[in-house]
Image (cartoon, rainbow, N blue to C red; front, top):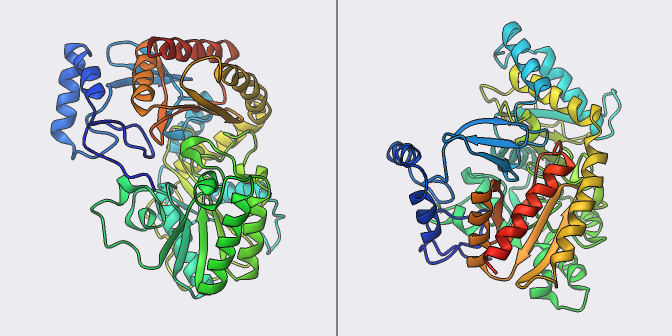
Length: 450
């Protein structure tokens, strides 16, 4: 696992770009005086933590693909914490939430409400369920990390086992149970002891480092996972990202199908975390549609609320409705009518505007341009993409950080993953000319830091 340095000497190889480097200090120093004062006030009032405080800038508004800063600058947001599949302030979502607010803004969890029931039915249908008793079922929560916790509890209840298998470098949320199954050093440091029974293996993207560089490393990793499940015999679930999200790396063909078979053979449940990758980002509604395996449980979040309301979901296959006498969630805002209304409107936008087809077409064009730079421009290792989730990998962490700030100065915000990867995830609603403009900014930032 890449260990985060946390010493300000260079970007950590972690889930996101870090906030404790000289480049961050220089960026803040260059902000207008009023912005610097607001950032200082923010830093005075909030507990400091890695990857955030001190913040980059002060946001005053958001619309479409843009964040609008307090000083009036408009910045294309290709980061968005993965919440903005349909952009910011989409009128359909705002109308749905506004209308719901006037009718039923809150529902105590002991009561049913129509928006939450309708959302559960929509998501169940997306998993291929009919409307019979053997359908996929849902639970909602206010945050993705809570949905991950519900999945862990359901896996323990359903199997009678307590152990979890997951992957180094994966991110599943920031709560104690989520960082226990997660693999990011920056989140686990100083937080122990962690959840008992959590074991880890390398992700398929790093298999060659441990299992040979002959093109068959992922097969040996799948064999290793099968060995662990067989010899341990008491692993409740394997939880993983179907696509390694921090670096936008699709798994090798056949990998997840083999792992799916192993889980079935050894009584281990397979949980896919699609909190950042679901809802069309990869060009299919669910990322797992492209990896050849259907999980036993699926976790969604982030963009489900249309970049307006916080809502996440746990979806469980038929046969897992086995916790009637346990409390898997019971969160105060579990069946939020406002969150459900926002999510239903988000699903409508994705379907009605054919954002899946659009993401595939525009993503292919953008990826071709990024790939044309590799080999033609110095210091670029690779360009990857799935739908409108794109990655440009550099060979130097310091340069990657410098490119990020140079792009931000031009009006483009994106995330740095694993220290060297420019992760580009625009809203699926972005116009082609805006996509071209964003890549022009990135190209100029690369040239400035060649």
